[in-house]
Amino acid sequence: SMPSLLPVKDDIATIAEFLLEATNYRPSILVVCGSGLGSLSKCLENTVTIHYDDIPKFPKSTVAGHAGELVFGEIQGVQVVCMRGRFHTYEGHDIRTTTLPIRVMCMIGVKFLIVTNAAGALNDSYNVGDVMIMADHLNMPGLAGKHPLVGPNDDRFGERFTPLSDAYDVKLQNLAWRMAKQHDMTDKVRRNGVYCFVSGPTYETPTECRLLRLVGGDSVGMSTVPEVIVARHCGMKTLGLSLITNKVVMPGSQRTAIPASHQEVLDAALATQAQLEEYVRDLMIAIGTE
Ligand code: ADE
Image (cartoon, rainbow, N blue to C red; front, side):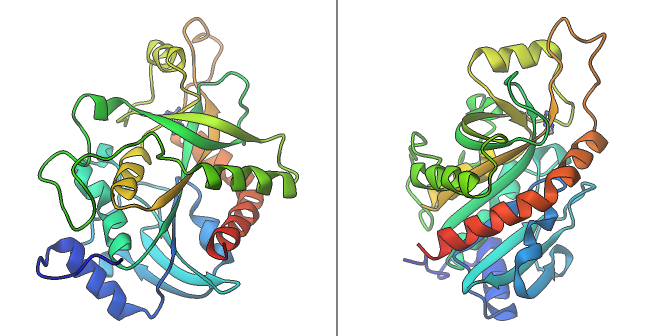
């Protein structure tokens, strides 16, 4: 059931009420568009776009490749809201701020989160352009206490202690794999991936990459995990997709490898965009009509 907007009227409730007034859409799915993946909203019809700047109390997004707007719309009767642009701790946002939109969407009734990101490949068998279905994560800042659920528990959303053994919904992972087969993408969609969350804004050193790979990491990035945690806290079912935009530089290969750059990330996202748009569109339809 939808958490009550009253009696607490904090920023989350203020924003939720604003959005319920601003549109008649009542989406069941939230799609968070990662770096260079804003075009995932393109398949939506009858769209209502709301810029973050025009939403009272909404955080401000500062990264190139992130538009900073919500796009509400529908596809085959399924109502969806896309976040084109997300918030990262490396921008200076408090970690709770980076996850505030998730709670807002929970309040307006969203039940499913499709979260995407651009990530570096730790797994040596991955190629640039691959799409990794997240099966688990490693929360490096979280293990050290930089975690979005630290502080008094907000009982409107969930309980004090949240299990994460089922953070990535197995049914949704299987659906994403079936969809990969339907789209002839089995050569580039990777199952059972482990995403490592690091704070950034620097890319990892070779030794840091070795550390993450040693514990089973397949991809590495600077987002997603705080959002997934807060989504799980409030009971949303989550599907995570990493677009591999670069291969990390491991110890010993610094002399020949190309250092990671934001331009490289955006270029790789652009190259895979069209195929990914169709893939995620069909995932939205399948999830929304289940
Ligand atoms: N985003 C894209 N590539 C990345 C990398 N190598 N490390 C962290 N975040 C990234």
